Length: 90
Image (cartoon, rainbow, N blue to C red; front, side, top):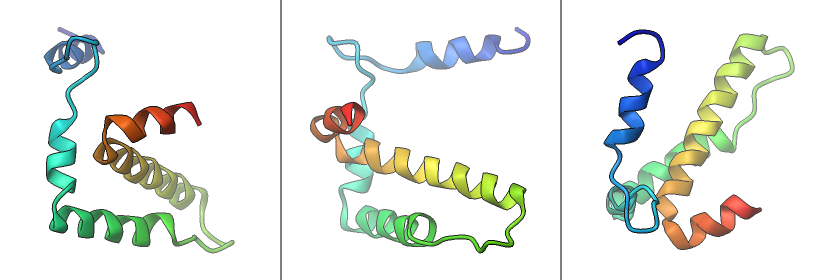
């Protein structure tokens, strides 16, 4: 195994249902709790609702954008399949 070959194994390891969708129930179980909701709220407050200043270096902006993408993905997965379908279309 070399290069990106390991990535093929990751996709195969995901469990899928009859429709071919990856099982994301664990996201709802984790973030559906009171503690999980508090974690998501804190991530949204500290990453999504704050801005870097105009003097921020490019590397800080790129890092923040990566953080924003991760938090948004976590929120999307935690919402579940009904809201996920609507979010993907819009």
